[in-house]
Every structure is written in C-alpha cells, then in structure tokens.
Image 1 (tube, one colour):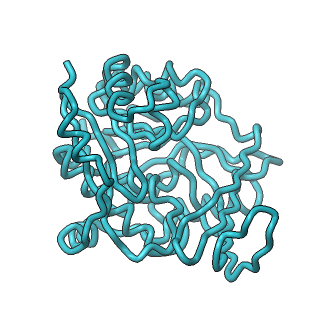
Image 2 (cartoon, rainbow, N blue to C red; image 1 turned 120 degrees about the vertical axis):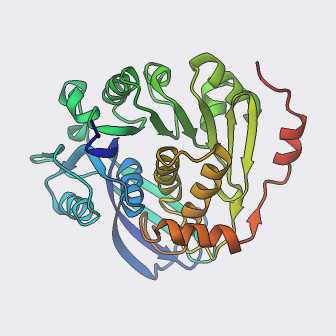
Length: 321
C-alpha cells in the first residue's frame, strides 16, 4: 500500500520580522533599519516548504497561535501545498516569533526569538496514524518528549528519521536511538560529546547511537558527514548572499528529498548545499526556495567555497570501526 505522504515533519514554525540594516551596530550602538519584512519561517515548517517545492507530498504537525502571526504561518503552509490537518491552533496563545537583524553587506543574520509555553505539544497528541502515513519523518529538538515519541513510532516501522538539532535539549538522548540521519549544527557535536574535534565528535555520536549518517552543517563552508566509517565533505556553493535566514532549514528539506530519491550521500550533500545557497539569494527563511532543476543548474555553474583545512583533515582521519 502506498503511503499518502512522502514526508511528515514534527517541530517548529515561527513568524519572523526581518529588520535589514546597512551594518550590524556595535554593542550599545544605534543604526537605522532600511526594511521591515514579516516572513514565515521555523525549522521544520521551512524544511517542509522546501520538500513541497521539490514536489513531495508533505504534511506538517505542530502548533500555532491564534494571533495574526499564527494566521500568517498557517496561510503560508496551505499556500505551499502542505497538509495541515494536524496543526493545532492554540486559543489565547501567541505564535512563536522572531526578530531577525540582517546585515545588508554580508547577508548574515542575528536572531532574537520567543516561543510561549502554551505552544508545547505533548506526546499523546501525536498518534501513530499521523506518522505512519509517510515514507520519511523529519523532526527537530524542541518539545523533546513529543519528537522522541514520533521518532520511536517511525523507527519501529522502518520509516527513516532525519533530525535537525542546533543545541542541547534535555532528554534528547531518548531521541537519538531512533534517528537514521543526524544533521546537526556545527556547534552541537562538540557540545554533546565534549570533544572539540568535529570528526571525532561525529564518530562518538554515531558509535553510541548507531545512526546511518552523522553529519553537521558548516555554514558558509558546506557540510561534513560520516557514513560507513568514511567521512564525506561537501563545500558550499558561492552565491550573492542576501540573507542567510533559513538556509539550514532548507538544507534539511533538500536532504529529506535526497533520501527519498535514493541519492548517494555525496550527491545528497551537494544538492542540499546548493538548495540552501539559493535560499540565501532572497530575503526570508523561505524567500529563495527553488525547484530541483534550478538547484542542479547551480551545482553545474557555481564555484565552491571550501573549509580551509577540512579535506586535509579527512585525509588524515583514521577509518572508524
């Protein structure tokens, strides 16, 4: 029997206010902002928007506030063609929001965010039928008991689980045993293992929890992954960067697509890097989401930006056992 959805995501959404400044101010300084833009975002919601743009049948599970920001978010998900049957609207609760300061010169962003406790989702609110209807589950680290519950359901049914995690969450050790593809921020592996060497940190995580791929994004320098005892490094694609907001979220959406397309890991990392780079060419967490043809075109023409010593480090790495 064919699953009605290709991918289901459980995790965050947010409605962002972007403030574009000519340069980031010094501490305690002042600078006028040039633009103010309200834009939908959030880790899993934006990843699902990327999946939908790539043609996947996509479902999002999460909570929204009943304020204007919540209405903006819900409308954006529906407009993207994402199924929202199990999105809960919380009465009297504001939606998660973020104020994002964007440096016009570099496109780099600084995020100030708030998520009210009334948006928390409980494990009992996620039923097996909501998860087993898809070919892949994507989660983040927030509401850890709920995402652990969802991951356990999927993993137990042989459905691959991908996770986007950027910091330490209490109880996240109960999520990791059910993860097939860990793609963390550059800071997470060291924080989790107390091992400063990123290669060694990924090895330790993979060895302890047994996921198929342990990986980390490297911002402007691409992504690093460990699979079958072998490290793979994918340099970033160079574009005219307008706004880095949402680049990691779009990377994860592209990676979900890559897994479902059966791509090898090297191609999956390149494809995900390219899609994330394209998103940086427009304002907003989902401003530059493109289709697969545009992503492949960028992969063929764009120069790459390598980490200064990553290839050498991988060459010296001892294969894991």
